[in-house]
Image 1 (tube, rainbow, N blue to C red):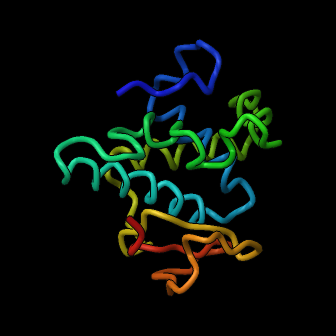
Image 2: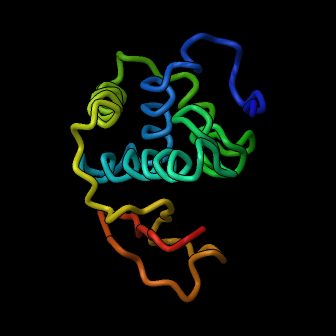
Length: 150
């Protein structure tokens, strides 16, 4: 399964650490360390679910595929104002360096999943249709996390 080209052709966008870090920057740069780690866990929980289902699931089978799946992490959507920021950010930015660190630790298995296996989340300021009638399994920073969404 190939991922539609959501990013410029650039080797950085095939590197799981780089793509996860940029996703964290786009989705959780204003969060605490725990908030960034929680979002990283959602990505890894989606990868784990795909692995448990034979290596693929509708939102992807690896970190890059999960992060870049259209309409899954809004920061990558072509119409999202965060997209230009996450494409342009560099290691000169302290927050992005933190995101790189979290991504590296998460991919190395060194981040505890405090989301209880969540595969979805949203900010406190929105209520997506998929979340209606569901109780979050964790609330970390400004995000509510869910582990009962298929």
